Image 1 (spheres, one colour):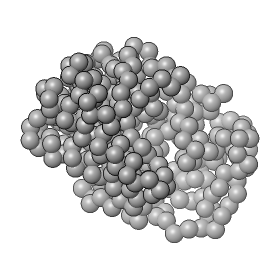
Image 2 (cartoon, helix red, strand yellow):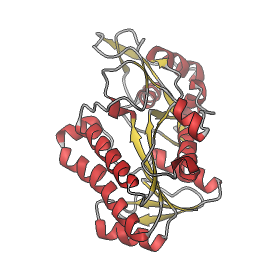
Image 3 (cartoon, rainbow, N blue to C red):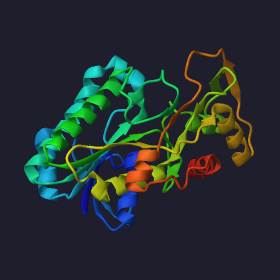
Length: 309
């Protein structure tokens, strides 16, 4: 297939493009402009902003794509509270522009990158796809709106589609680690390197979350793109995660074991939050045959540590 990956120079987008190239697909990665970051080997860059409806229509028409993996988005909850209009413009408007372009260009397979944030933070245990969304900020709400847009359009039969709700993505791909300063594993490694004075932990660090290697996530996108299970009307929603939780304390201990260095920690009073938030991955395993292969915590941390030098 000929595939367009939006956000293809980002952490997850790069892994998706790399996975697709390795599977023999022809891949273009969409970028807003020159960033100094090279595209993955075997993929070609295409410049456009998903908010530019005319330009996006030109790119999709010229590319004659069989598939689109849409990962371009703004992703920080706190920033979305300060600027909700921009978050909706990019996350919802950008999705709309791609769908309009795809409708004009002809049948296409469309895989949308969503997030576990849509479930909200007040549930506990293993989260299933059929739970009603409960977003708590404009970022989460914009992803819910985009999910609905993809689903409603897919129900018309114009596209084949799937939505992947990714849980905490971690690790590294081709020497590119997750550099998001709001996430625990990058911050633990930054503290080890002395770039942060310490890692802040609420309470005793027993809160349990889950982490999936970025290459496992990329494999989920490929399978969703290739699978006949997503070819009917509508857009099935899949959790992408291991279903195996680890605590913050276990992350710190694993990082110390992998690096041989101490993690400076500052403990804050406990805050009200669910003790355990993980995904139920049975749907994606049963329908797409996906299972995490590289997501053991030490392997995730080792790859990220080596990529950051």
